[in-house]
Amino acid sequence: MKLKELESWLTRCEGFKKPKVKLEQYATSSHVAARMLYAAQENIEGASVCDLGSGCGILSIGSVLLGAQYVCGIEVDLDAINIALENYDEFFDEDDEPSPLDFINAELTISEGDNEDCCSRFNSTFDVVVMNPPFGTKNNAGIDYAFLQRALKLVHPGGRVYTLHKSSTRDFFKKKLTKSIEEFGCAVKGEVLAEVRYELPKTYKFHKEKTLDIAVDFWCFQKQLGSDTN
Image 1: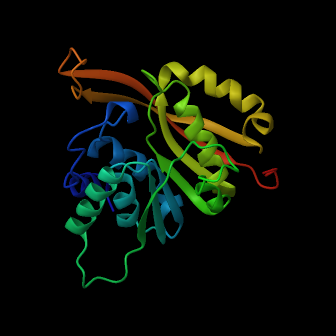
Image 2 (image 1 turned 90 degrees about the vertical axis):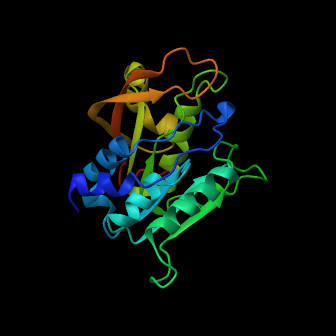
């Protein structure tokens, strides 16, 4: 599928109806989502994919459109999951083959081993994780890093994580990579594939501007073979 065609399809996805500031909910635009997925296409096709913090499902649905064998969206907000299911229904009919897409309602950042941690059952399961995590502003400092830690647990050795993080955190993530076994429990390589201009629309009352352009890095992290100590 060509990039413009993918972006055109993804414009049909609805965003959050009542975004929740405590979850830093901002819809991923079709423009950004299409470019993320298109760059990862060769690793998505025929693969098992996890959309971590799947929100309204745009990355999940895009992964299905690009030929993923199976996609699992993991999301803490049931309202967002309901929107994602509505979006999915816009693309696929009941008469189609059984859906290769599931959504799971789960907390992503609970400590592993906690009784409420259901994500750990999927450790080392997926070929690819795609995500647009919260940037870690307001009361969510460090949530972007927690998402990456979880994502690297979910992919098997050799698996990849495609993710967006503010460009201002680039040095922070590069430093973490230099001691990846200590930080992630496995050897990890990572590179910035592109710097993206992320247009953030006015979503909450405290926003003063109609839109705000944020410099965002599009990263690919890969868990190295034979290095998983989890």
